[in-house]
Image 1 (spheres, one colour):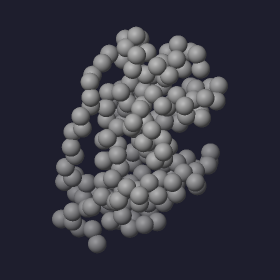
Image 2 (cartoon, helix red, strand yellow):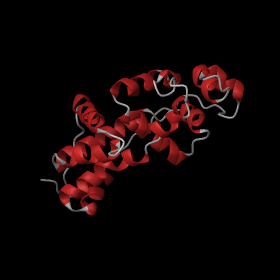
Image 3 (cartoon, one colour):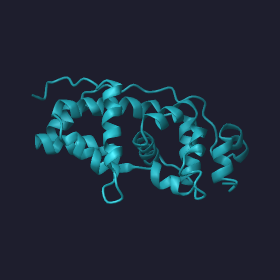
Length: 192
């Protein structure tokens, strides 16, 4: 039972990615990923939803780096703070394989099948997924009937500031070509 004094525990990574995969398999054009994920989470317990959210925050935070942001900037034709939050959620929604690839080398997004489809601009729609940021809170509200309990349970969680790496100018085309050559070729130079 969740109470306002409960201390939620993160889900193990394998469990977290299993939930992401379960939602991905059931996603259709009529039922977008975030909606399916909300349903998947709502079929579990409030404790599991909170554990999911804690792990989501960790993997989401690990993507909070300048090079990942630059990838979002190229794909989206710009990328505000809020858009970068949505971009990171969209990367997570692509599943563990793509998440780990982007974490290791954001330029690898140029190899995504959607980017290679001949219409790389479709990648923007795929990887900017605002609603995925809120799947857990929506599922928790369904299960508990209480937004206040969600705020109390997640508001006390300490989030660590990640090392964003070296800052650089996203509007410097040569710098972008140097750091993200494949994405720059697709989205800035139009070679895709």
